[in-house]
Amino acid sequence: MNPIISRIRLELESLASEKTRESGMRFFKEEVKLHGVKTADVNRIARLTFKEVRDRGRAGVYELCGELWRTGFMEESFIACAWSYALRKDYEPHDFKVFESWVNGYVSNWASCDTLCNHTVGAFLEKFPEYVSHLKKWARSRNRWVRRAAAVSLVVPARRGLFLSDVFGIADLLLADGDDLVQKGYGWMLKAASQAHQRDVHAYVMRNKDAMPRTALRYAIEKMPEKLRKSAMAK
Image (tube, rainbow, N blue to C red; front, top):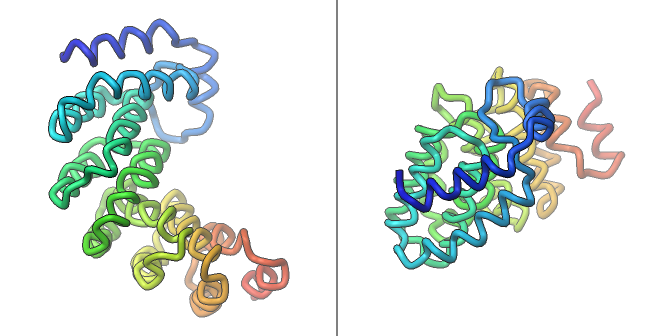
């Protein structure tokens, strides 16, 4: 194990508490690995250690991120996400394969999925929008986390008014997905898009509300005025 990773692990273990670990576990139905470290401490460690690793260049940082992901600990995945996002100004097109390998190989809970995809993948897609089309392949995956990733990777760009047609394309692919965390993921994506394109998203929901699971529908309309929410929820 790289000495930097070993030192991070030791610091996380020294800050861990059973109370924090048990509190965190309540947010997940699936099994997760937690040290039990508060988010503020994880963020501080990520910020300080990035100053040490940034001189290794993108490839060197990504290699260390891979080591963090492979441990399976959620806090260590958050540090990997923070490091990769900190490099966003330096992203290159072939970085997509690295990020995709993390989504496919290591993401195993909604928190790691959303942290990676909202920030690292979302920022990459804004810089290289030609890669948005790859999300359609993710949306067809058998892996629930990859399907969720297809949607939540567009949350931040959609909030800025970007990629509306792609948002609807991903929603179409996930429309009748039976997994509630995938439903919440694409509902969240639609909700984000509604902040810039309320009329278009409402029209999409109205066209598809009979096929949409109620979980996804409720997420999608959450930020809309009451009148629009009622029309969407009406039978």
